[in-house]
Length: 259
Image 1 (cartoon, rainbow, N blue to C red):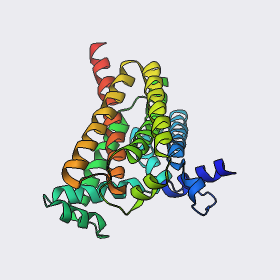
Image 2: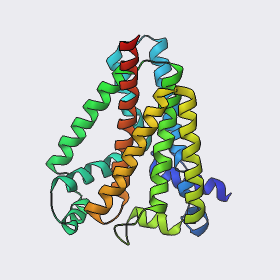
Image 3: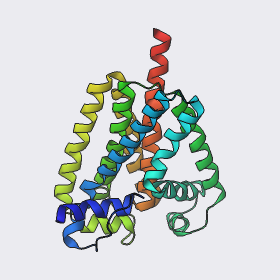
Image 4: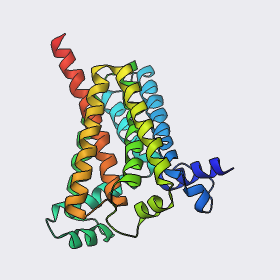
């Protein structure tokens, strides 16, 4: 029962997938971060289903790419994209830490957030249109959805927090942090190994991209905000997703040129 409640907490918070809404308590929150990558599994399965359907029906490349672009947003309800937009607004302000924290809490969407989100979707659509449907693309990109969430949960249980309130603080303080860190670190390594085994250099490039964004996340969060928050976690997840996709497409293009 607690296992299903724990999974339900993760899906209720981090996805738009309809699930029973359990009352959050000490038991079902303790390992909720460990269930977070399962949302990525739903994204991966939906991505695979749409890519397969597009292949079978010979859809126009732009329509196929549009589906691949919006699937993660449909699954998550845009919760991470919201954090990405708020963080972009705060970072673009070039203000003090205190002012940046105020911008994160502001429910209004600023100009820089709109600009960055538009650029993000244009880039994501372009990269999705360049992906060639293959075993490597299905496995590597699919596992990438899990890896970014595993790393995001690891950061919440490991990195310093910017404040003593908010979503990240709620999950971090409720978690058995030592167990969560060990599990998500092991799971991240397992996923990275799977991507490398399935995709070779494609997988290596995607893992390196995720690692670079993870390091940048830590440095940026401490330098500009004094720690991480729920909004910054959304920023990381969206950045990791598009950088891994970009790394895959670049490898694909280089391989075509060499061959």
